Image 1: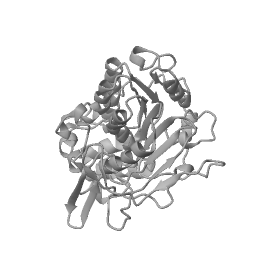
Image 2: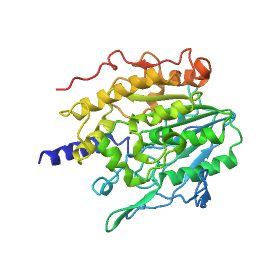
Image 3: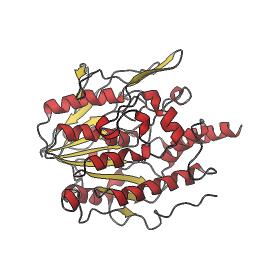
Image 4: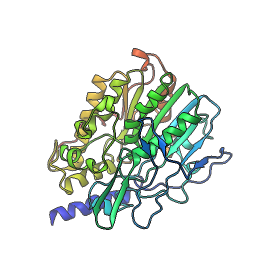
Length: 387
């Protein structure tokens, strides 16, 4: 009975948080340049030398067709954005799209409607004149899966986020000529996509300055989930960084290992101190048997907070090309939010912090210095106490 209540509590947080699994459509931007939607995509031979076909999850009753968007900018710079939308990994979680994960691309989806870095008429937007490639999310695998998984008769999902990325990457390589700067970012599940896949873009454009922002994707998980949960997707990570098998790297080490491999890339994470959606997914891992917890067995909230801060501290001490921004509150994601231009709890407006990241090439090995520093609200680096 206690576990059932815990599952319902977790589902309630996920459903109420909405941001993680469903996009909030904003008003059209006045005067925004048109976006081009690319659909009916052919099978390609990817950068890994394998054949890849793009598809969404194929959850019963949904449209399995995958598409992506691009918009040309006036500068010689590129943004690659990975959309968020939860995750699923077993028969229970995969049975609840729109609570645990987004299973298809909404028919009314259009990046021109979004806020944050997509608000191209905002003078404070540091990437307003960049070319954009927007990668939707509809596979439940944080953009890294390459498997068709049958969870029970009648429910087979296409966890093909990695294949979708390989198809989009093929298009980028054929249509985007030698960008000077590349920002790879994404929110929630998309932050993991940005973390896992920016090395492919770094290899495709070795002369570009590389920037990475993982938004609300801190990699807090349990060893049990890393071993028995995410393997449902057959996750594909760059082997020159992580090696086989995919369970060899804890989720909390994804970004640090990639940052170490590319020391000239500028790499960062954004989170709130107690991100309710990240906490709810961590709670779901525990409630569904992928535990025990790590640092506080009596509170998933405290457990998540302590692990998150411990990871950021390790990154900050070991990776000279890494910075963090920890904001006050419990909200989830910022890159597609109006808060991109107003969040100031860490003593600097977040859009200004990103601008400093993109402008300053000084510091050790070109990884930045100047105004691009770790930032946190006055109490945000104080771990919560386990009850």
